[in-house]
Amino acid sequence: MRIRLTLLLLLASATVASAQTGKPAAPPPTLRSILLSQLRSTHTEEEWCVPVNIAVAGLTPEQAKWIPKSEGGARNPAPADHSVGMITNHLLFWNAESLAKMKGEKGAPLPGDNKETFNDFDASTWPSTAAKLDAVLTEMEHLVATADDAQLAKWADSIAHISAHNAYHVGQIIYIRKLQGTWDPDKGVKQ
Image 1: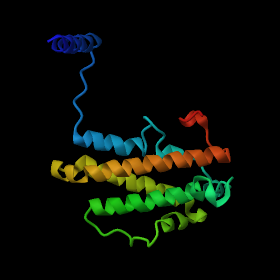
Image 2: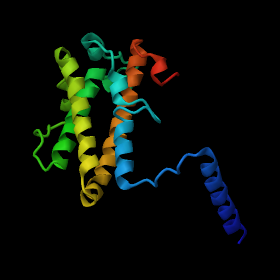
Image 3: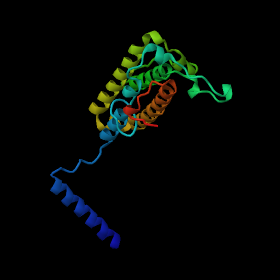
Image 4: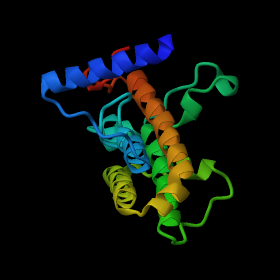
């Protein structure tokens, strides 16, 4: 009984506070809003982590192909001995593959080894690699924004994994840029 009363008082005070500030209460989250938030927070919107568009912005082809040196040899490599460009190429491959599946299309042939999705990077194509990743993520967000509820439910688990995968690799990109000395801490990660 006491907990119910406390909850009712909290709800009432939140309603009064909302009325006093003149701000309408935010609508409750929907599956669509949650999925879009996940995708956008790893693509363009600065929220809990730095999005990929900010993480790769301003890199030259030379900087994009730089690979940190391993301190401990094969037993302790730098971030899997990948460059920012290699990781971005990997993200482009798997996000394009996911987008193709969402659209009911056949994606690119799957590599025999996931390492190929990293190692296929060519520094001379760096600007187009970053632009293609942006375009794929933008199209994926558009599909989620316009899909019906049944389709969203079908895609939900995949999108959650796509977002986690993207966030993981964006963290690697920032770490590599810090090692390289090309990360601006004013972009979101101070330490």
